[in-house]
Length: 400
Image 1: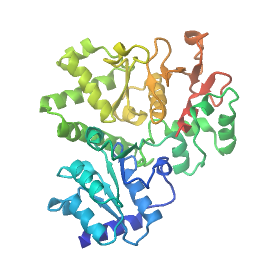
Image 2: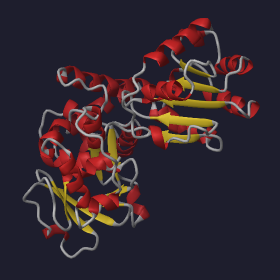
Image 3: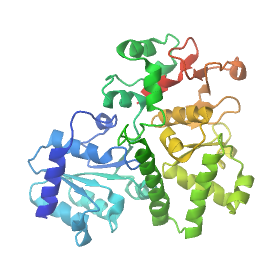
Image 4: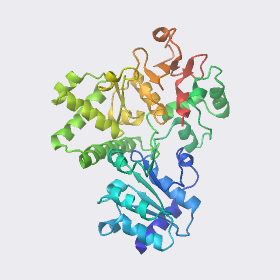
């Protein structure tokens, strides 16, 4: 126990307090049971330690523990909570709970019910695992998801500018006031900064001097999700896991990727239903993003209308093909995903919140495809500013 406490103190004391992720201020830290899920490497661990350092300092009422610590080999979470509570503890912060070798859902339930004035915050990188467990904790647990760096956060973390996030209404505003406020606040041109971000800086662990290693680490994160997270919950044979990797390879070499279930089932040599299930698992694992067209017709939700990589950095890591159109759509989807619902429309690229129609393209993109449709917008790349219903692509990077 002493080693666990010393480790907690050392890690909390060493955490940086200069920059905080966007989610930090949105979490209700006073709730008794908080879950923070997110892909590996997005900053969950740092956020836990920052909270302890900011709120509690070294007084011992808060304890940090990673569930892959050797202490948990012969001890349980409930034992730790009981000891901590008896010694004056009030808050327990558990990291990487999916690595715990035991029924952590049941133990958290027991702690929640047995200690009404005790608080637990836990994180997990296996989003498939945590989503499955959430049903058991739904009445007790307050869930959050941490996404990767937005363009706005990249500017903040790289010391370029500290600017507030925008609402979707701000971004789509005909006056374009918000984009000009940002342009005027920056000491550098926005488009080169955006190009430095796109496909390179979604994960906070990015080192601009080690791009090859950065993409290698992303590939290892994906491999872990496929070969550890999915088998932990699904009865999946090794051959099926291999075919998941094959499916990603097909996506990375067919850009723009068009979902053709029959063709894929022949290439991967699995059934049509298995192809759909594979994409669902990859979506839950934060590797791809399935966009459905069932915003008006429930019958359309069975098969995704569009499949994109989860973010531009995964696309850059896995694909050697530089399809700028798919890159733009992947960026838009990743920036809208934290706070908005996305669907594939009959015309255009995205329907947002069942209202706003977006057509994404370059400088030459026109309104031809969406002419006369209500609440329709062209999202144009390589443009510093827009006019009317024409919105610059980079501005969507300020949505969180």
